[in-house]
Image 1 (tube, one colour):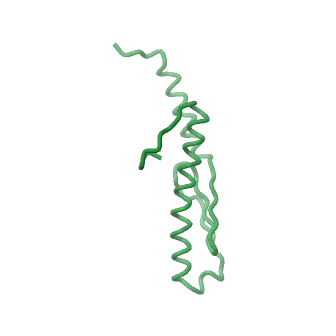
Image 2: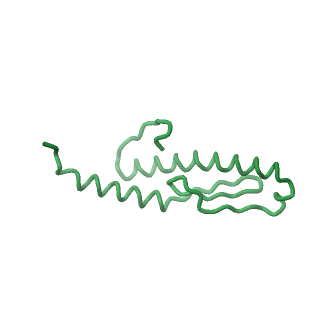
Image 3: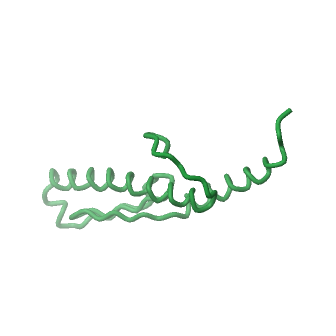
Length: 97
């Protein structure tokens, strides 16, 4: 038979993690781009500098760099937040966070 006594505590922690990741904010600035991510690696806001729109190729490159950096920083921040809430050390597993 499974041990269910800790299930309620585990579900409580999962709920806290989900809420904390939704509230987490990471801002990444490029030369002409600013992106804001949450802890679930969702983009919440994109700001473009008008002068960046004059050179679409450079703007696209700046946007790609900002997206990639934002995903990395958001994952790192999410891992740290999960460890704070649970006390668990999350290993570096590609694709996990």
